[in-house]
Length: 113
View 1 (cartoon, rainbow, N blue to C red):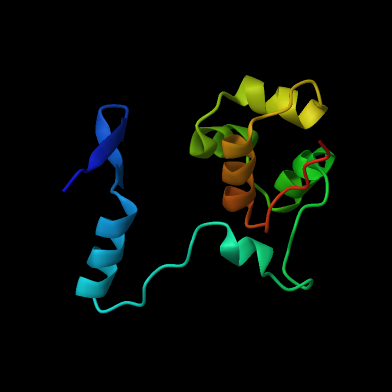
View 2: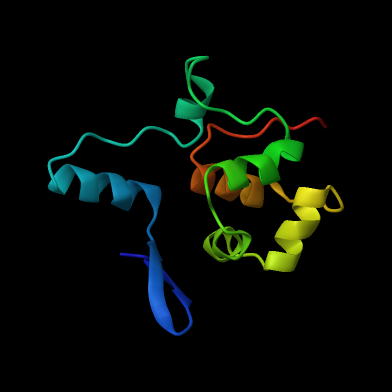
């Protein structure tokens, strides 16, 4: 099995496996196959929570009671970089946007480009 282990502070944190092997693991565990990533986001109902603009990040984080240091650590960025994103000084890449949305429990971000 081609597993990649991602560590943080010297401790294993994530294991990454190829998609086919992941599907096989789900089947062996008696679970339904996973859908293609991103397909569920496109099929969400309008009532599902979503963030309409990146400028709402700080307000959403504050409303959920998430400390900036905790969110930054969970996403894998520095608190200083998170502050620059919240102030509009920096525009994060798509992976960071997805991680922010996931950790804040929202459906995704609009991308004005």
